[in-house]
Length: 333
Ligand SMILES: [Mn+2]
Image 1: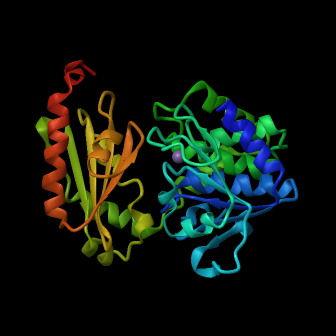
Image 2: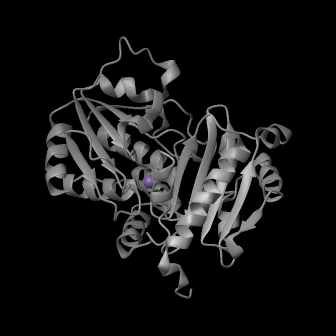
Image 3: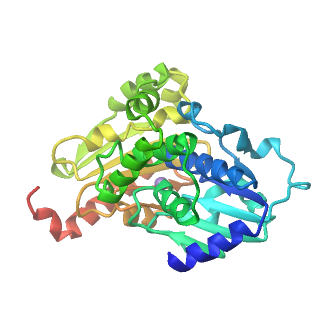
């Protein structure tokens, strides 16, 4: 981190035009981090543009700094220029999907992330898997670089840490994450207002979709595995967007005794599989078996060329195998 920090500082101070990259289907950490970074760069008189192929989820529309955000479709690659590309929350460059060509036009790459599976790519590497969120690394970076965190930046960073810790419930809720939250509240973030905007303003279609998905709930391996499926037909029935699938997996995971929750989602590009695990089960390892990745307790993969039932059989087989091989699981909860 120290080396990456020095290099990042040098690259940021000596250049003017920045492009910020997020992963596909950006989440609260991605959106909050990229907006906070764009606002910080703006304070330095730098030009900052966040480029993503996907839109930001509408629930984050209240965050400041959106004027720095553009989708790839609205931007010509030919006359696009940037000196430095900053990747946020991306374990590898390809995670930014179709925004990658815009990064490739920049001379230098800065990699800021907290995924264990990060490949440490780029010219400046600020990767810390012990950070609760990518936003936490930015908070640290801003402190080191002497950025004055104003209320606008504070709100963005607060959303990053709030969402990636599942409202300060997951095991990444460290003293540092809570100190960061406290600092951001002192700087103007309002917790009650923010959680209402993020968690209590759901589109009706998302609750309807949850109802559909829960009908598919299955329990396997003597109660250790719970899975749900979201089909294209369900999505159509309730006029759901892919954003509406967020959070469904927390329901199978919340069942007593469940060690691994799995969600299957049919999409044009293949079947998206999400994993949420407890204690000794490494979700990112399971996801890696299927060409995906993520965190120890939350990970995912995209499986192409197979139907949802085929993927389900394959994945449940692997999860069962992992559970059987894991002696730690006999330890009582
Ligand atoms: Mn994250």
